[in-house]
Image (cartoon, rainbow, N blue to C red; front, side, top):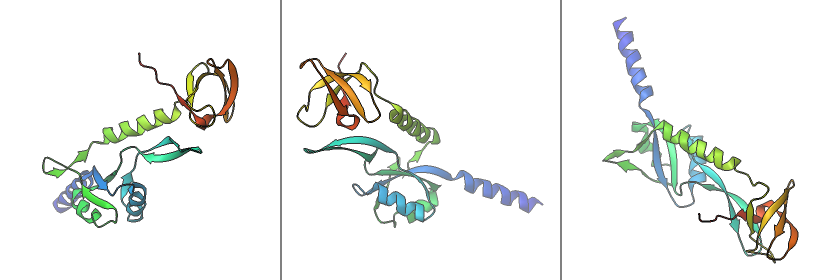
Length: 175
């Protein structure tokens, strides 16, 4: 019976050794590394946010890592060295000579932040700037919001225009 108690406490210690750690990846390889880690059965978290990318001919919404070249893994410290064998993982992030432990509440805070940012929407009366087309860099106030379009009042021109939602960005005014 005593043997079982020791064995149980050792198992509990092993479970407690699982922490969140940060890995540094090759540039722009975060998504591929995440996929490879998941195939190995490693719990990982890659914070992704949606961003507008403007090209000369179009605007596109793309999924981008929140932290370039970083991914978080949940595992035991003794498993970290094996993760360096995963193609795209460059190194383990260290702090004070030991692998840096990321607290679960910090991971949760990142998740909450991304959730809040995703739910941030445009509202009637807000000022936005047109990102593409003939009226690029012209700003206007939102009068109506439709499914995929905004109706804007362009004060400089005294005109009302209809623009795709993905072709505008909020105007940030300094206070």
